[in-house]
Image 1 (cartoon, rainbow, N blue to C red):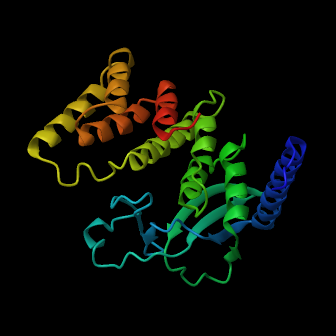
Image 2 (image 1 turned 180 degrees about the vertical axis):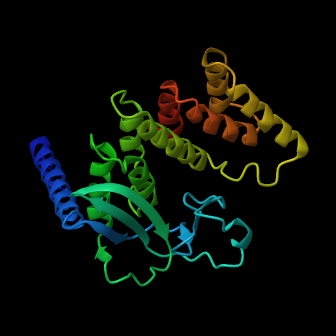
Length: 261
């Protein structure tokens, strides 16, 4: 078996990083080429589905969904179809000022809307640059779009964002929220409360009440519940509400639960 020296691995890693940066720059330049709406279409997670316009479900395997507008009552009447993700970027003055993400059939675009088909690698590199950029107003939405990509989980990047006190609060909050969902999915408790008992509902309500207490009181207890409790629904609730506190310790707990640094 041929042995690859450490220096060779370093060179390969550097080349891969350079390729990713060039891909991000190329896609970013194409998106920013003119003002208006630009659809970036890219492969989505195998579990994700939607109608391409109003809702997305099964982002991380859970049946829970994300809905745009007043479509809750009709959600079961419209098929949830797996398909590509579509990041609709609003470009103004060469900057992406807004990002709206969809999954499912790609609708026909109006003549004034440009559409770019991109690979997962290109899209992840571009979205990562938006999520970590110092001036991107679309950073929180870029984080969601990253989670939807058919690519390795973005948890290491989201941990970096969540731990960066120089990042805007709404960006760190978005990173923590999706890290909480990633930890819940990783532990296999995403649907723990779907068929819970009345006692489970009371316990999860108690976790919510706890989360509203001052951080000095609530965060340590939420951390203990997130790390270990015999009630899966309670653990799920604790993991979620811990992230909602915005406390920096939440990122460390999520890293522990996800098995990463």
